[in-house]
Length: 227
Image (cartoon, rainbow, N blue to C red):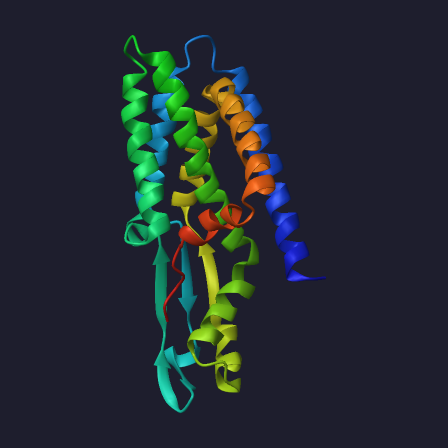
């Protein structure tokens, strides 16, 4: 079974679970969703700063010989703080900050405009987290070990040592994702409008400028673990 098929299956299950949670949340939002929006945004902010996952290199006795050199045990921690320096991390943090401002603006008389803009920002945030965090985690240890082998020079000793690499999911990513679902459920009407606009834009780009479709994917760049 190919890694792509496994990753697709995992992502599909995650999406179905998140959609189900979003539907349940939407049913409990009520007529005044602003409190729910703010609560979701608080969870997003908390989840951004708490570790998302760890990649641990733990060879027996604390070290192993790789390419003739001793490589010691190490741990890489992934979180919003780590990613803030990357292009993708800047977009992610900027989307969260802008969403927080718009969530507060939703308490004013300009709430309709604020919610519409917030929904657009929220879609950008969801795209970044789903495509560049959850998709990476879909490969889990297989992906982490491949990164290790590539960084260690793709030698046989690197391949042998890669079995000591393992990933561990952190609570930060869960909190961040739940906050996104809660916020998205409260903004579902505005999000549907944005999705309609995005579909029209994608169709237009596919017809008139196909190269532009891939530009955004290359622009976002979440860094990986460094061993």
